[in-house]
Image (tube, rainbow, N blue to C red):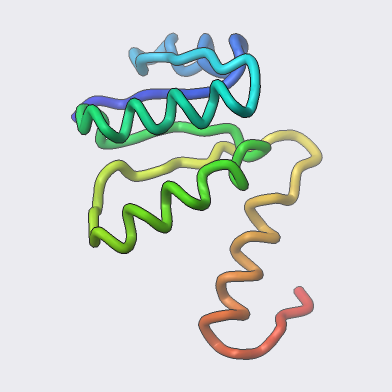
Length: 103
């Protein structure tokens, strides 16, 4: 199993310390391009992404779900003062149960 980290220099350097291959993205466009290339290669089972880039992965994750693909697994790493993952989870649970959550 190979793992990749996509994000800014500090983010990928941190993951590089434990042997995760890093891909630096300096813009949202570059991030999307790198992510697409990694998925098309099919060499990575795990992709670490900073929580701030969660929204940029949505179309890719939907495409993988349509294909019923179980890999790669995305790991969204929480960042200080960010609530994106919590808001995404709240939205998905609300869609699943048909009731808006006010957590």
